Amino acid sequence: MSELKVNYSIDEMHVAIIRIIEQMNDSNWMPEIILSINRGGCIPGIYLSHKIETPHKVIDVQLRDSSVSPNFSVLNDCLTKYQKLLIVDDINDSGNTLKLIKDHSVENKSEIRFAALINNIKSKIKIDYQGQLIDKSKNPVWYIFPWEKW
Image (cartoon, rainbow, N blue to C red; front, side, top):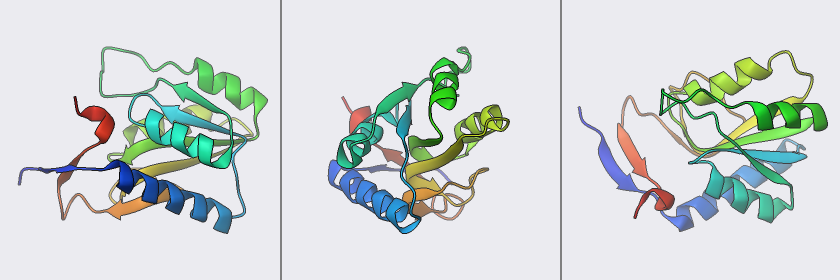
């Protein structure tokens, strides 16, 4: 079964970010810093950062380009400076990238939570906040985000 390509709109992103904020409020938890995963998490992370008035940085740990090793320098720096970190990505698909971050940070005492606009229920990692829950095993959709179109 091939994946259907679906355009994801800025309006859908706004709704997802509001849902994520509501979930954080419901859990009585707010981050001290937001770390967006380069590249897909950058735009949602910046929007979220402005909306909740929280500092933002970008971490470059994407696994799509296997020729580049993950760069944990920004993450490591934030783990020493902040107690509550939110990692943001556009989609938690396989969970490989978020699992890499979680595994790297396991020895640290900071509280790290994860958020994504779209969360695949079959992912390897459970996230804390999501805009939308999907099951790619039943509905194999490939989302095209506005920042991916040119």
